[in-house]
Image (cartoon, rainbow, N blue to C red; front, side, top):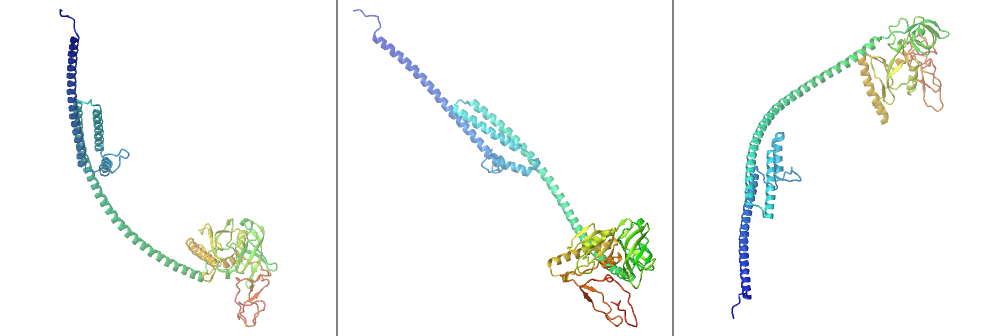
Length: 505
């Protein structure tokens, strides 16, 4: 049987086998090729990673070297939440720059460190990105290394330049500070020397001023004593009479004085009366021979006045001078008052009555210390007529603390007012003398049931011997208006008995 030319199963099997062998060969070849390529890529990636790690370690070493070069041992380079943290390299460096450089501190080192930190962060981010993606190439790593080295070199040069400039600036600043410190030390030494000399001069002047004040005080006391003694001897007064008595009618107890409407005289004004040959008015109560009170203003220069007190040994006569310190034509006189104002001798203050009497006569109290020791008014000046002294309480005889405190305040004001009066040349007069000068006569005092106040009368004719002293007579009835504590009578001598109407005190 002839052989058939048709392919058989063997043929197909052989063909399939060959094809499979070819495919396997090709696949094996391709796999081997890919495997070889993968191995090469892996080895290359490992080499790149090792190179990158080597580069990173190099950077860390550079940072450590940089911190060592800067003299900083802090672990943390920068604190983003607190850039001025002194526990970081940047914070400590900023503090050093601020303290050493002060206002001239440069910021280049801080900028360099910041840029280096940014570069390191960029390199780390790039390295992480290359490691994760495995797409980084050697050329890119070399480029990054080249770029970093260039930047590092540039930063290094900049840092070196900045450090040089900083050292130069710090040195110049230190030289200026040293020069200023030396200048300040010199000036301080001069100032201290001047202070010592000034204190010595002050002490000398203070000592000299104290000596002059003591001397002035001694001279003032001597001058005051001499003036008081001279006043006591001469009884001089610069006061002048206000007018004179033109006519007297003894039976009616009336006088007429040469003052009237043209002189701005008003009714109720009282005057003290002096003899026409008196050596002066307002010298002493002994010169006063009587007191009159204006009852009617009759003409331009004529007024009627009643006698409210008269010395029987020196009766009023035409030509006698009338005077009061309370009144000046067309002008209100001003007075200063201190002390208790007892007008009627009953031991009680009559301050309100005194104010009324002064107001009626057109006078003004410009400065006053009341019974509580409070001072009011405008003070004593050249417009003040007199400083009137009432009764000044004796602190040693006061047991009550409140009353003693008031007395101390009154005494303090009295001292000041005396000084003010002396400096302004103001005359100081007791209240009793002042009342005599103004022609004031205390009102009659009536007996009031239940009041234990005693009324002292002047001694009457109870002695048969001439000039024999008589004791005080106390009465609880009315006090005669013919007598007062301030009345002065002429001493009388006689070879016989005194009249029972009069008697020496």
